[in-house]
Length: 255
Image (cartoon, rainbow, N blue to C red; front, side):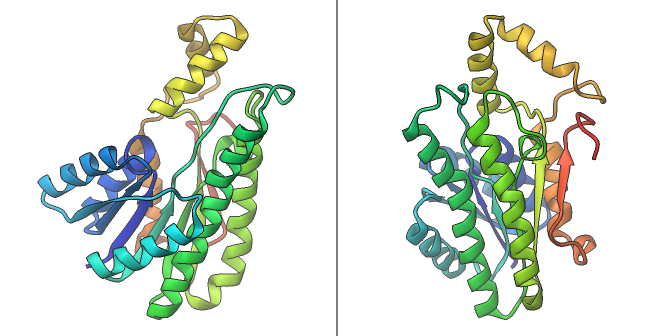
């Protein structure tokens, strides 16, 4: 059976990706720093008739990421897809952002993605199978967002890392692509809206209405919208696609 590792899969977009790839008959490694949520998602996948197992990992820990890949292959079989979905955000002006928050965000978002690419690629090369690496960038990594300077910088970095890794790893039949979500209703988005509204001294409802005006299709995304793009990147249909970043934003920006 093909195996897919999805980091940050205990909730939100990662959870949606886990369910979607399970439907494509992947054995799913549900990876999250929160073991309780990872177990909940893995159990739901198993109850739906598919294969899944939960793993607790902090993706900022390079050794832990490499150990994860080895353990998943031992447990579930050869790796086929690695989704670097784990990420965090905080809302603050560039003048008020705290060093500890910046360090943690870069360690998780950018370094965590770097370690995931390294670990997955080395396993694919060892297996001699090729494989798919799919990274979570963001609309904020295409056009930076106010009050999200560190987050935007990390996501710009992930887009660059995606392109560079794609060029290096193509000779091993490894593709590397990224998805750039816009506004997706998740617990993390709830926190972003609440903090942004407080800084702007407006209601959360008004904050959400203001954002909705920017979306051409007239609605926020849900995790399944993003999961479909990830499933396409993982599918045979995307075999000839690498180094690309696709906006999944309902028409907020056009490039």
